[in-house]
Length: 128
Image 1 (cartoon, rainbow, N blue to C red):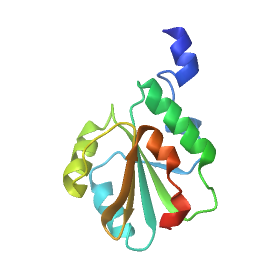
Image 2: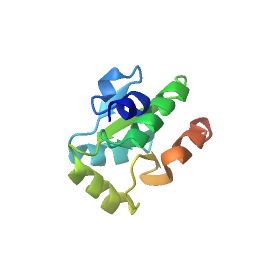
Image 3: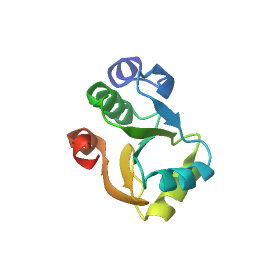
C-alpha cells in the first residue's frame, strides 16, 4: 500500500499542510454561523475523507488551483472525525453526502455542490 500512499497522499494528510486559509469545521454550531455569514460572504465547505486516496488527490488539486484573490470563507471538514457534522449538513442543506464533496453556500442555501473530479471543474469566481 506504500506506493498508493505516495501517489494519492496517504493517511497523514491534513488541512495543516495547506497554504489555504482553512477553517476547521468541528462543531455543529459552526453550521448555523456559516449559514448566517453566507448572507454577506460566500461560504465554501470541503468535505474530505483523510483515508481516501481519491479524496486526497482532489483536495491537493483544489488547493493548487484555488484562486487566492477571491473573498470567501473556506471550511474543511474531516469526515472521519466529524461524520455527525456531515450528517447535519445533509439534513440542513438537503444535499446527499458524497466524498470528497464541495458545497458553495450563499444566502443560506447551497447554490452549487460537486464531488470527486467535478470539484476542480468549478470556476469559483463565478459564484462570488
